[in-house]
Image (cartoon, rainbow, N blue to C red; front, side):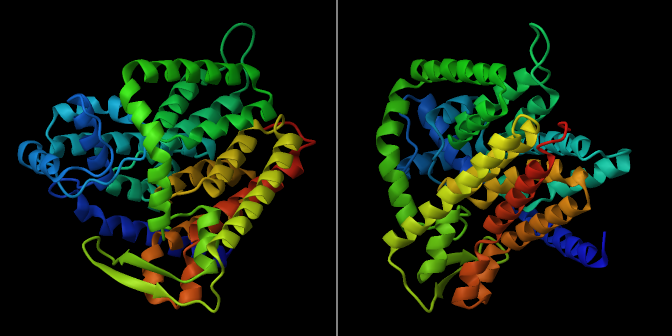
Length: 427
């Protein structure tokens, strides 16, 4: 590692660790976790026969605060109703206990992911494994997920499990490939948490993993039937109301933290006003971006669609050329593409950058430089609100896409490796 790379790595580690330490206070005396509070509230209403996931009635919140110790203001729930149904057992506990249990689950999932990543990058001995574990557990999107009570670590476990199953091969004879069962189960859980992991299945035909694809489709069909059986009314209400709610949410909250490519184009293309947090969550202030131009939002959406489409073509060609030889890398490229293409991709979803980092790291010094660059950009993205408050409009709008740039850089690295190894044996 060169001195320059070491310096960037040290700065990035310092930012990740420092911001993690600044957020420790949000867990004491009780984890506030506004996103988990929303799911807890939704699961509570489902348990009592009337499912609600938006616009909580004040009397409901007052009752939950008085009777169940609810803390903070629950955020609206965007996950499918089956996620609230799965988390109903936690409502048997008062909110503080449920929040601690959920935090422990998030830590456990992140620790399992760290162990899987340590194995993938070829750690030798407990010291290297511990170092990777600390880097993963202090990684900005991981800490943000824990602070908010998000379910992104579920998606990380699923992506790593599917990638591992693809790397180990399709199996022999009648027996299943090693790792297929946990991969299928974790992917199903990830789709229950958020719908967009369903798009990951597009990688399987391109890698010719037909048995695994059949297992995914069969499990997905069975899960859909169970959803209809166990949450028919809630799911029907969700399907009817969610498109309008989502569109309204995007209009009001062209999120400063939205790291999809289309959202970044919108931020760079016209002036905006945002309510941003300070170094501590309790402080907020308004910022206004004045740009030298103001492009019509409809035109910016067209530009965003064109860029996403162009990236889609590059992704598809790379997967078609080398997906059979490098199925794991092709799958992680598909995961990276969803981070850029799917709207409302928040910073906590960038836990999904880690699998591609782990895949690239052992492949050579050039790939390690790309990983360090993406890690550094993710650290800068951790300070998203600080850049919005301190930088002038144009620079602030560009800085709001540091997470986008991290995904683009990793995608470039994966595409480059796939193009180089297409004629070589799979690793």
